[in-house]
View 1 (spheres, rainbow, N blue to C red):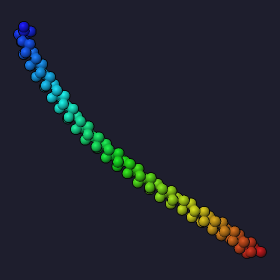
View 2 (view 1 turned 180 degrees about the vertical axis):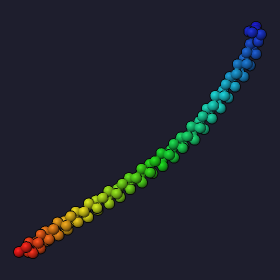
View 3 (view 1 turned 60 degrees about the horizontal axis):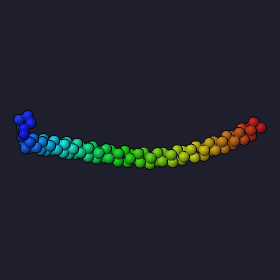
View 4 (view 1 turned 45 degrees about the vertical axis):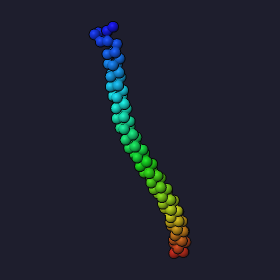
Length: 99
């Protein structure tokens, strides 16, 4: 018995060759795409790690700036208190001069 001029054994052999070729192609594409995926995934992980480190550095810098701002606010309060004290003393001196 032959179909399209090929015997059953020829069809089985042809099917085996085609199946093997398709299987090799699929394996090759999977391997190629998996390698690219792993490389890109590693790059993304490195970028994420660097971003996390940058954010940690930013957080540390922000804390330092907040402390500096508190120190500046305290210095301004002390300076304002000193200026107010001087104004009171000047007022007293002015009153004494007027009298």
